[in-house]
Length: 250
Figure 1: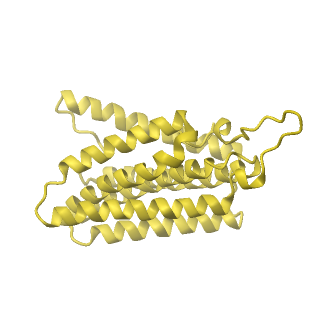
Figure 2: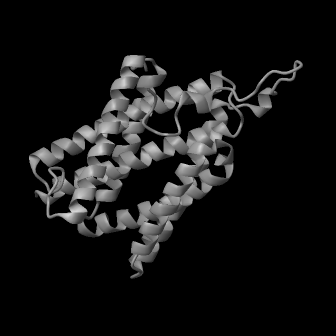
């Protein structure tokens, strides 16, 4: 079992080259850690640019619903296509960042209007969590073992299934899922989901390192950066949800 992120799977990160007649892929054509980091920064800049665009338009009185829905749909399509066609990641990853930024910007504007100051808190919490995980992984305080990976993946799949099932039920009934509202149970569920999202960051780091070690093709740098960005967006949204629940209890 691998990362919950559909991007991070062993098959995708295995070296795509096949050695025939002593023909090898040059190191300049293979995935590198620095290249993946650089592309992750590029995607972050594009995501922020998209978010600022929606945020600014919302502040001017524009209803961001279309951009939120459109950004979410286009971003999801980019993810699905890249999952099955990772070689297209150099084209799809930047597009994903921009459209996901539109989604994040509109969503953030809604939360900020209701709970002033919540966005900067969520952004800060997301980056603090990321760098803490990076430090723990870099200094091998947390090691990604097969047992660790299987537990995190199982928990993530359970969360995804729960969200999907409860969402479908609420479409046709008046059922109120337990994670809705601001009860202590709901807050506890949000904290649990955030912990699982943070643990997925360790899996993402591990799989990127595997791709580098296996000399995966150069385009996998975009693929790896895109996968990491997906996890960070998930983490940020969950922090928004948690903080909104806590603020609503005041």
